Image 1 (cartoon, rainbow, N blue to C red):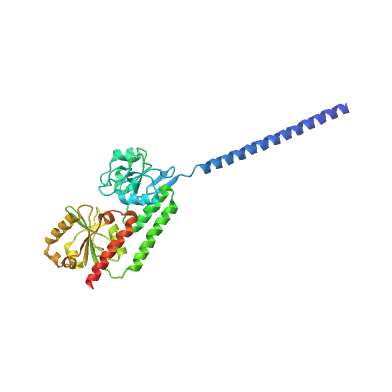
Image 2: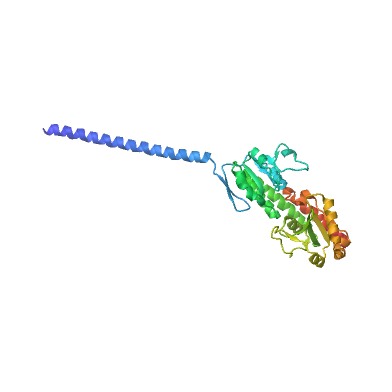
Length: 332
């Protein structure tokens, strides 16, 4: 009997040990599978890049699934920056002037004042870059699957911020830093070349029936500051509808007596100049201005001053600086 019980005990012990071994083996297998699953998920996450989260100039947060492969733009300055970053432009602003070879095949989609929504939709761009004034049209465009990114350029710093934003859209941050450094280096060279003679300057934006004074917080006002001029409108009250401009005040302009007058226009430059001279002739006191007596009217090139010139911003500063130096030399 004792021998029989001993055999039963031995059998039960062996069975128990076998069960423990199988349990341990199963636990090890489950652990290995779990580790394998975690590794696979991590690998998949690495293969799928994080979404790109942008903040545009109005504070809107825009999310892109991937770098923009197709871009549409409504202004030539934005297009110039995007071209320098190597973006694929499928929609470009309508223009009567010369079109860069690199974007001749891109579809014309209108301009900031007259966007062509049918064309904008047809190019199927990943993003549309437009001015802040486009805000009311965002839903119309984004409902068709194109993200809208709003910007503005009222200073050279704004243009550099645009470069940073567009580089982020394309995921070409290193190229963006290179372009910003290029602008900074060229501006530093211009500063070193300034002679310190600040001429009193009036910046006039002219359009049919409208003349406004550009304030220091406008792009042309910032260019004037960097070029070494003194904006006589720095204390003029800004307009509510155009906060970067002020109404022309004959009384204040006569009091400030500008040495030179710059005319900014999008249209027929000579026609605007003639209209401005007629405007001044209505107030005989204008004829006593130094700029008028010396006939120092400079019509600024529209591609450098009519809107954001993009990477040509240094050309804008150089042009104005050269005009100021020439006028200063005449005064000496």
